[in-house]
Length: 166
Image 1: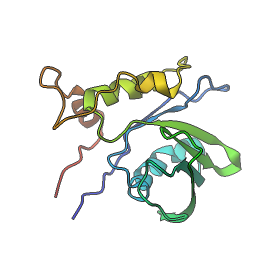
Image 2: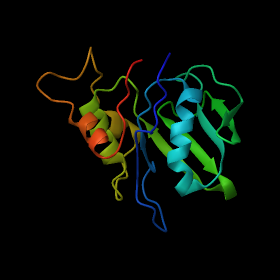
Image 3: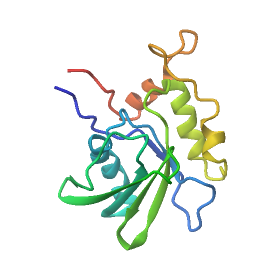
Image 4: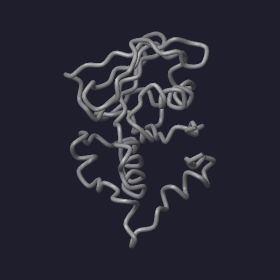
């Protein structure tokens, strides 16, 4: 039985009157199963967006998803497009408010993922997704031995919860 993560690994730019840049923040999901990842993500985005009505994503990078997903006490429309950038998801809330999130691939090493999350959420960052993800090494059996996984430790220390296998 898989343990469902209780918190999204997410970092958003501060909420300001006018947004800058290509993305509003970054999200580091634990898998490519969008339906499994959405409850934690939408819970984290609730204070910013209110009720989430729609999520758009790229069909080629996520596992097969349903068109409408029950998330908590609401039903969210999931719209997959081959034309959407593969490293982005867009979350649309009530009243048309939306956030465009850079998706850090789940297999990214912890230190690199944390670096991307922090950079993408810097208020004045205007980098495109290619620049943000350029220095992202993929974990090969874990993080580099000469670079400890401080990102995972920070998530735990900041009130996050480490994913544990059952």
